[in-house]
Image (cartoon, rainbow, N blue to C red):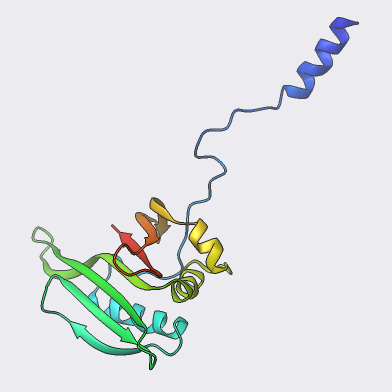
Amino acid sequence: MRLVVTFILCMCFAQAIAQSPDEGVEMLRPRILALDNSIAAGQKFNEEISRAAVDYKLTFVDEESRPLIRYIYKTDNGETMRIDFKYALEGDPEKKIAKRPVIVFQRISAELVIITYIYNYIFNTNFSPDRVMAEATQGSELQYRGKKYQFILQADDYNPGYWVMTFVR
């Protein structure tokens, strides 16, 4: 009888396979980012994001601290959203490709409700602010157009109630 039970148990578990630590974890896939694109593409990204963040109007563009470009959006109530881009000059002299600015870092800072709208827009989700807070990360990998990037989502240390989304090449 033991032999039959052992045989049945072996047959039941024959298809069992071990899971690697990364298995089952779905990599984030944004639908829109400005990384590895030109500054003009970054401006189009801003336009898309400002549609998701209703009532925010562009009030100021700070290009004094190049290679950082900061776009400041405000509402009539004085709420602020900030979108920053850092770029690097890239090109290939061997292929005679001239150096041009390419975005290598982008950061969005806003109140949690607006970050939730933007998060939902970028990742095509329907999360609540509580769920977005639960997704906070110090560095998750995400994939966009076949390339891997780092994603950071955390509370802003300097502005209570504000959250920061950062994308890094």
